[in-house]
Image (cartoon, rainbow, N blue to C red):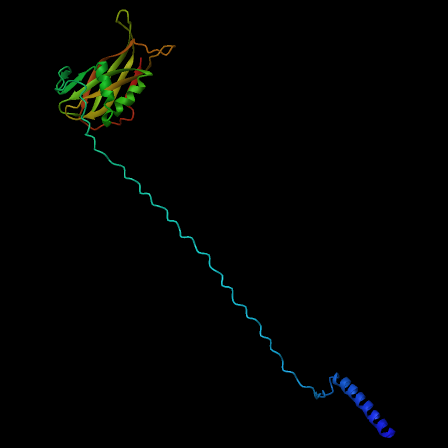
Amino acid sequence: MEQRLKKLLAGFLISILTLSITSAVAASPSAKPTPKVSTKETKKPVVKKKATKKPVVKKKAKKKPAVKKKVVKKKKKSKGKKLPRLQPVNCFKKSWPSEFTQNGEVFAKIPIRDELKCEASDNYKPAKAFLRADLKKCDEFACGNVTVASEAGCTWWEVNSTFERIDLTTGKIDATLGSLRTISRGTKTKEIQTIMLISQIKHKDADGKILKNIKASGIEVSCHHDAVPDLTIRNFFTAN
């Protein structure tokens, strides 16, 4: 009995060692792995059901409806009634000039203050552009003037004059200051035009007052029918 137990113990110890060796050899790359047979029941793996989370459906933020800007229609400006066309102003007599000095087809006169003022205020006429521009120059320089007209019309006008200093107490000529040649635009048949005669003589005293002793005299008027000269410069003064 004891011998059997010894044999069993000896066999048991050998088995244990062999397993240990086998286990050690299994770790070696040259040895083949020894399969192990397990007598234990293999439990079936428990498959846990994962709770599937429901997808969170995010509510889309509702877009605010776009506020349309009101289109403000501009009111059309009412054109209003058309004003009647301005009629030409006749600063002289309605009939063809009778107070003018006539020489053939040419008429001329020295306009009085009211007639000159009336002619200059007739500003809707482009033909008065020369007159209005020249009147401004007469604030600095001594000027004369003459109103002209022609029955047949002229392509351009020429006026020659002399400027003199007058003794206001006696009315006599004190000195002849110079001569002036003036050219101006043409006129149509029976069209009246006032021409300013602008010298280069300054006629203000030390206090800025206009001297009234300088006069234009010996005025000669010519109506031309040939080509119009350059009217950029219209007054040519020669001092004595």
